[in-house]
Length: 178
Length: 356
Image (tube, rainbow over all chains, first blue to last red; front, side, top):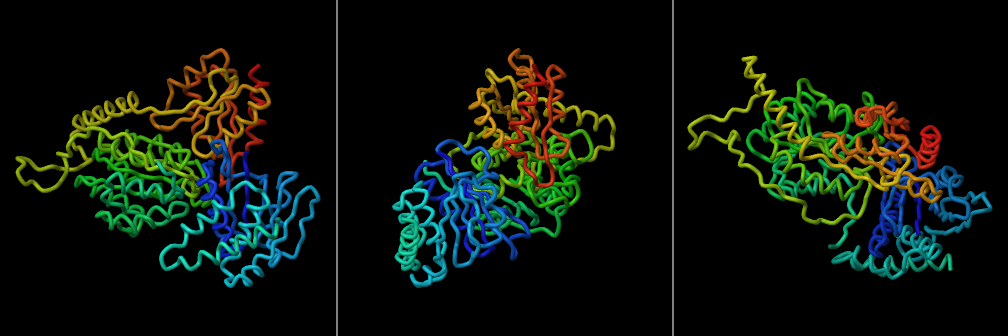
């Protein structure tokens, strides 16, 4: 089993954080993981992306041209990376930001209204968790419990009040795919 | 032991603190800036000194001074910054002081690009400064190795009283990977009775210097250094071989290209092609004898050297080891462009054809 995921969006949308969450969760489940960011001037206003590998074998290349899944948080990301996705791969689109549709018919596309759901849950900052939920439900590569445990470890002390909010967002994201 | 997800550059800084780094002097430059950033937040809390210098030249000379006073001193930078440090490095090597220098390499020449590169191989292994000196060069290809090597580097430096470089392409510094904080081998180290810590009860002054006015004295000093380097060549060579036992083509690569090569190996082996990977871990001393032995094996038909460099630099050491016995192809990119799995697969297939 090997998943090679590209998560891409504007700097500040939380794409890098989604990637880190996936890597953390993969590590918690005993997988070999890598997280490699794009870095440079593109982070200031343009597209920021990261590459994540989740694998049951040691990870060779942490970067790749043909992801098994693409998480596109903005339009330039979809335009840039759709062509490279492996045939039969999945594309998760933040449909509140991206109005374009996935043009290839050999890919499974999920359109997730991340921002809208985050607003409904009560905080625009949790739109990442919505997307993470969609990814977990779509790929079934990670256990939802692992993510929920991770959320509990992420927010402790004074921040513990954010746990239910994040879990709710994560579950709403999963529900978009199921 | 529990695994933790760490970014390469931050892990390196934490590793140095755990290895007892007393002083860190540095200057920001992409893609290594997280090293001084982490150090600035955490080294003072551990009782050490962090100082952001006014330039790379100042930083390496601060390392020179701190190392002379017996401190465990370190600096890190990326390619153009490491170029600026070369004068200090030859002085430190000449004065026989231990220190750790991290080069998180980007593409060059000049300011080049901030994306990962491996164009500083010559500079690290041949010496970018003047004179007959060597630095021991460790090259990690994952974050765990980066963490282990940085910790060991302090001991190696102290043992030989010589600068040790940890050289890696920018991707190893930028990426996150699970690591374990397991114990690394510790060495029995000689006391730093040469350090300039004040005369106190000594009957002589300790002097740190790289200048010898008497040519015979300088000649003897160089002979002594040469003996030390010969000892490193004898005792410190490291490398890794993957599936070389029956390989017809052997890829030689270090750092990130060696990781990409692992994926290429998987693809090629699945097609029934016999391919192996030879990965130098110490770039100097280069694992010449081990590679020479492989080049003499009947089953080995050809080599493919892969680097993030336009014309190749390590390939010279590969050539010196293979001694013309087998053909060597080169695959490389510079400027932050990485060689791909597909390119490696094609290069290996072409080498197979050529070798038969």
